[in-house]
Image 1 (cartoon, one colour):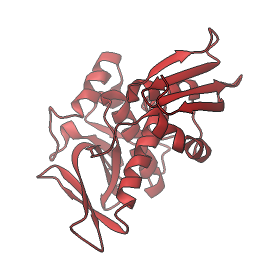
Image 2 (tube, rainbow, N blue to C red):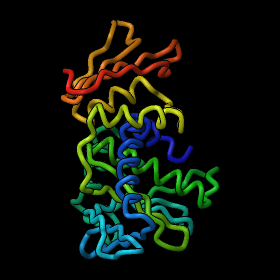
Image 3 (cartoon, helix red, strand yellow):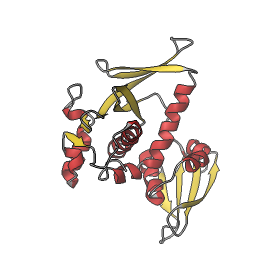
Length: 240
């Protein structure tokens, strides 16, 4: 556990976030071996092929927060010297004000007392913050960038990625579900449809299943008695 008050928000967006992260990874991997460079003045994060520097994936990078081991704290971008007080991170602060979440309204959030604060913990915390940003802004993907001294910066990216479709999601869904567990799978499926702009219909009043639909096809998720995903069946190829 990283920031306990923020985790439920990240959990809601978990399925959508991980698929969008996979889309970003695939686009960057298409460059072959590559590096990334952040230009805070220009507000860009660029992936560049090592073998051919003319091959690039250029994204607009919106700073959300930095997480640092020295002060053992997270600093929101709206309070950061290189951040924008009225930028995208201000949407998270507004949500915190509306719902009484101090971790979203405090400029600097200390690590929990029992947190190790090591590299692995900070990386996990960055994913939590990225998931919260996706959930509350509807924008994705996010990127967790090591920026020196053990500190990580979390960005939301405006990347040249295609809109996520049901067909695209079903191609990667078995791999995604095998790679990590969803704390609240039923809510994660609902939020996947919301964030992707699909139509979702519950299969019954007990919410034991959900069907998602867009122009590329449909998929039905079944849930077991513990609200875990037990099966996914899809029908693709333009079916509405």
